[in-house]
Image (cartoon, rainbow, N blue to C red; front, top):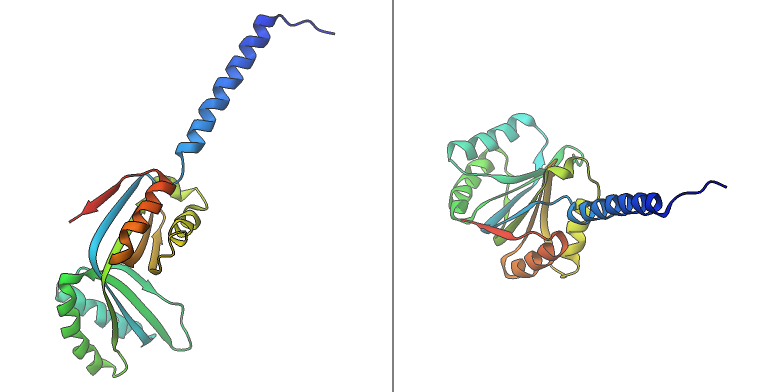
Amino acid sequence: MPHFSSAVRTTDYTIWETLFDELRKEVLIMNGVSRMTVCEDVALVTFHKVPNELSLITKIFTEFAKAQINLDMISQTAPQGHFIDISFTLPSDQLMKVLELAGKFREMHSALKPMISNGNCKLQLYGEEMKTMYGVAASAIEAIAETNVELALITTSEVDISLLVTQPHCSEAIESLVKTFKVKAEYLV
């Protein structure tokens, strides 16, 4: 049986223990989110049963651009027959412009009526790690679910998860996400 000196075993153990401790620290820190921002006073607009015609959809978004309306969290459902739903958010102070354009859209297609929800809060989670890390969205949704706050809209990219909640429940949602991801909420103006 080979004989190892206690110095070698202690050194080997110390090296492995140190490596394990560093790896454990990285795993604890690495949760996919490095930054969280909060944008208050956000409106949600949804157009239901929009004909799935790119020329019409292009006209709608072009009119918003011409009116200098800053759209965010744009989401389209999968086609349901020949129709889709389109949702997006915008600063509440631009909502009147959307309402003015709604009449113009109805001229293009009589069924185009906006459903509007004002007084929302957008929470954005950012992290380069999201590109290769699974489960970040699940953790974010679980954090919101623990507060019983309803999510009005969720959109994502490779490095971003945006969650829309009602303004009265924003603080609860923020507290839960801060606790889950160990990040400080940055308020945007």
